[in-house]
Amino acid sequence: MDLLYIAFRNITRNKRRTLLCTLSIIIGVGFIVMFLGFFRGMSNAMVNSMIDFETGHLQIMNSGYLEEQRRLPLDLNLESYNEIRDQLLNDNKIAENIKDITARIEFNLKLSVGSKSINMVGRGIEPEHEKKITQIANFIKDGKFLSKDEQYGILIGKPVADKLGVKVDDSVFIRSFDKYNSINILSTKIVGIFFLNYPIIDNHMIYTNIETAQELLGMDNEVSKLIVKYDSRKTEYEKKREEVEKKIGTKDISVYTWEKFADVIVSQTEGDRGILSIIFTVVMILILFGIINTMSMNVMERTREIGTVRAIGVNKKTLLTIFLFESIWMGVIGVIAGLTFAGIVASIFTFIGLDATSVMPPEFPIAFGANVYGDYRITDFVTGVLLGLGSTLIGGILPAFRASRVNVIECLRNING
Image 1 (cartoon, rainbow, N blue to C red):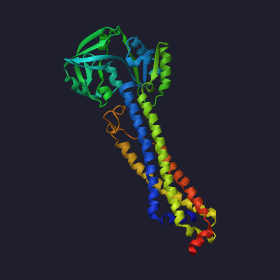
Image 2 (image 1 turned 45 degrees about the vertical axis):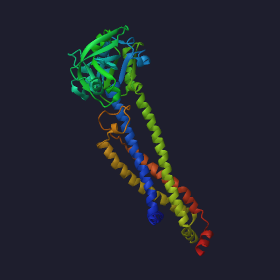
Image 3 (image 1 turned 120 degrees about the horizontal axis):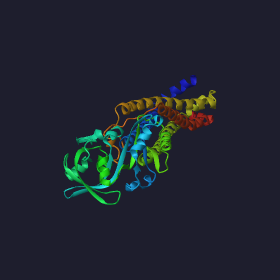
Image 4 (image 1 turned 90 degrees about the horizontal axis):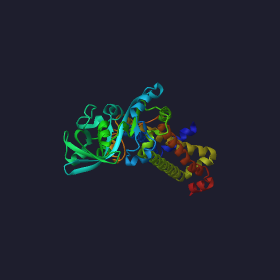
């Protein structure tokens, strides 16, 4: 205990240098904890947005569809989809936690009005089911969402409406190749205009009733895929996928989890790991440099003091311990202050959030129009503690060892000089 007290008194003698060293620890620990929780929250937001607006949790499709998905094939369809849906929902074990199952048809089209036209992607949906699976209905800015009773009608994004100069109730033409490679043209009207603040959908997607899409594309009781959404985000989706695939029981139909369609998120998550590794390395170097520099300067400035205490009988081991305790004291102070700083920032990110649309590129599927919230766990703070104390201890070893090896005679000669 006496050595701890002596070490504490020593670090308070040069407050400026101690403050600079402690500041590096505060910044390092604070930012590590802050980034861990925020990156986790960002990843969660991207995953939830992708699931809620695009992929659902599971997708059921023709076994050959995924490989050809980029061309949106109409010759690799899912037949008898209503029977498949009923088969799954009537099985109590498989239907557990299923929120709903909806059918979709996806196809290429040209949207025209007057002399203006835009190449788009069409999505035929079942409005009553789609509302339970995605949130598109919550982002209608003008008009209304599709309804089962109103077969002919489409939803378009606000940027597309602005580009074509159209509004709700205006008539437009849809031209598309059907499953037999014949061109079909359909006159329809705009029933709603949506805006997600997500250009990939806003600029390139239209929605229509699935019956309208089937009529346009010559598809009878066929769809591109079925989307399954669960109530609980803690569901083991891979296990559910295996159960659903086994229940369907045919090699002509495959089932995939949402991860199969989330290349952007997977790439972003891998990138986050790389960024965190770089941050950890930089922080470690920052703290180590601060500790080594501070303690080395202490040794140089206290050469005469070291020689004196060695001359009166303080052994090398005791001197080494004192210098290590000084490093630990600075680490403890820095960690406590750093955790306090991180706790304040974490509270802001957790309860207030950050509008990530203002700082992230538009191609990232973040929560549309909503804040991204941090997801902080006790392990983040434990990591900060271990990083701070571990770095200060490692950084203090070399200067402490040098101090214990100082030549007593040389120190005394300097004193006499």
